[in-house]
Image 1 (spheres, one colour):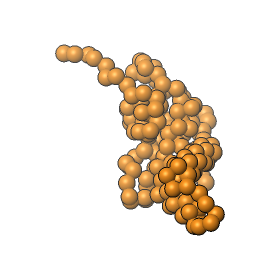
Image 2 (cartoon, one colour):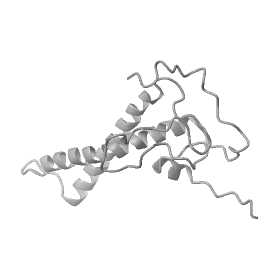
Image 3 (tube, helix red, strand yellow):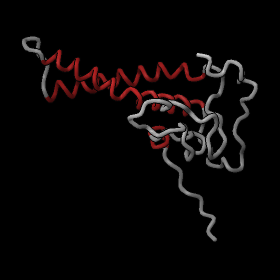
Image 4 (cartoon, one colour):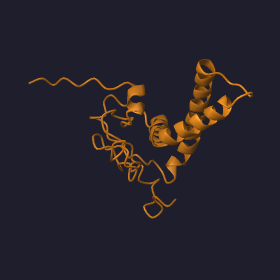
Length: 153
């Protein structure tokens, strides 16, 4: 009987795949990303594999708005550079307006993925990877959580 431990994902793979930052095995979200948007941002209360709580304190995920904004700005800059190289910008015709429309549609289509990615990235900055997570329990955050104020947006 082999007791080999499976190699864990890289940091980037765990963040992009929305895996728990502590064990890099459990999924952060209850439902996979799909076209059905209802309940897509519903997170597990704790990692189903290692038990790490996903909400460290009340209002923890308010910071993800800054991360989501940063990702959206980076995406806008990247699309502007790609548009400039491929199509070009000109005020003599409507190419600039076409880019604005393209960029707006791109942001709307990618917004659910950006929101999930920003939550995964934000959590990974506060919960560090523990290669020996089986021997160590998750950090106790019970004194920081007020059950009455949870999800009180």
